[in-house]
Length: 73
Image (cartoon, rainbow, N blue to C red; front, side):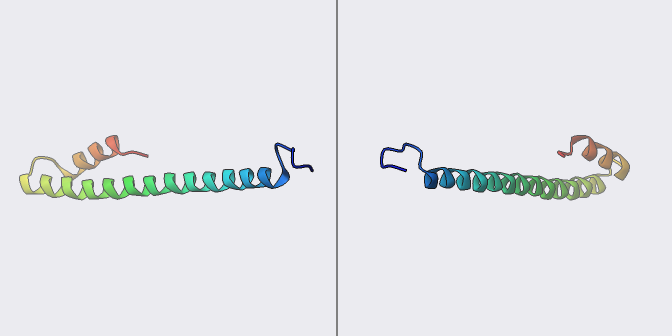
């Protein structure tokens, strides 16, 4: 290796490490987002069920059918 080497081994190792870490961060971000949507869906489900019970507008089966139709995987 010389000083003129544009792509030294340590630079390639650093880039490879950053790629691995960014991939893990991306996966962790997706998992966080999925769990957040799951929490929001559960909160919405409880809110909708409570509102339906209070008003008597929908049966519980109709509520669950609607929630399953709009649930984000």
